[in-house]
Image (cartoon, rainbow, N blue to C red; front, side, top):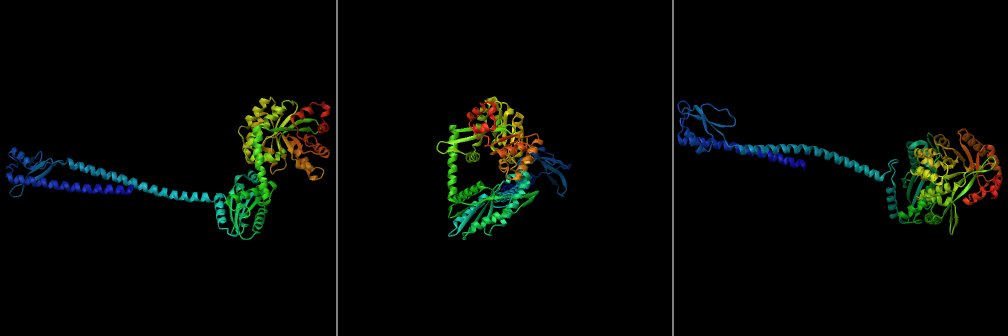
Length: 581
């Protein structure tokens, strides 16, 4: 549009300038003709010297011709601002020159106007050219951006697979044309993939993930659509008339995951699979995806590498989870939760040296609900900060009356990620009036995997307060030794799995001895939990453990029960007395 406008203005300017020039030439010819007519009418001629004898004759000619400042000279004036015309004698010889000042202001103004218009048009044309070029480039960039946006909204950036939106749209289309057939939706979630990311870094983890995606896709039937839902979760949509297709699909997925992957080391990645079928488990996208998700959750809760097909029992379990969650929220609001304490005893002598704070919930109709039931729900639904704060403050307040004992409090991953954690611990210790050296904060390996740098910064800040940091369930993960080197621990808690195997599995004893030697070499205290028999107690003491904890000594008890135990004479505080209490 700008280019067309500038061309129009430029054309008008050129045309106007030409018209003005033509008018200027016509007016000049008319002036010369008027002068000639005046000369003829008046019979005016120059004298022998080439001059007009009568100056009044020039004024009369001015009146006849309308010319201004008319003069006669024997020679041309040579002045460009004056217009001139020669005078000839009878023999045709030039005898002089008339000159006058023509009225050219309007013409000159028109000249300037048209020239200005031409310049404006030229500037507009240049602008239009650059604008057109910019618009062309912009249109190309917009087209590329549209293509990129289309790709981003339909493809997973890492694997190039269809993303969640595309998979759900494909599922909707498959359900719409199902007829008498079957539509299978399978969700695959990799087990413990955070550990791979931590060990290999983001780039290495992406390599493993793309390799798994390629293997899973290659194991599927030709008509199956395979995509990535999110992070380490994939989805399969399959249309079939074969009732056994779901089982075959599950076998293919499991077989693909059974192959080890070599990236810096050998990785054996497993994954849970949840399967739902239409029409048996739903005929809408919402029903089918929800029930496949419930089946996947049930598979993950059951262990690694488990495949679960949706069934009504899973729906009932989910209803139970929702009930527990609602009741937990009510219990938090009403302050109906409590903290119990399990004694920690010295391996040498059996005296109580500390307690571990454990959250307990007694429901008014259900009775005691195990932490294993409600803690995962609290973590999934954003309740852990409230619960963690409650346990920390209550435990430190109770421990203030046990001046010779340490008190251990478990920290969840949500608490470690909370930037206010350090301030909370400092405030809780100040309010309870308890020394930092008596406080033990326990963390698990899972906390360290999510974001190791943030976890280290948080633990370093806690250590700066003077509290002790314990690594719980030591030995059950992939990278425990690297944790010991990197993080500021004071205590190692040997996982109860090894303690349980003592006396029945020779390897368990060797592993415990190795852990104890390693811990002592690093200047750490070693605590074994899950002690349930005298044989285990003796073996752990011989292995060099510093402290013990388990049902052999006492279950977790209310604070008042700990008061009663500590009120006994020192000689009665041996492990046997604790058991009897």
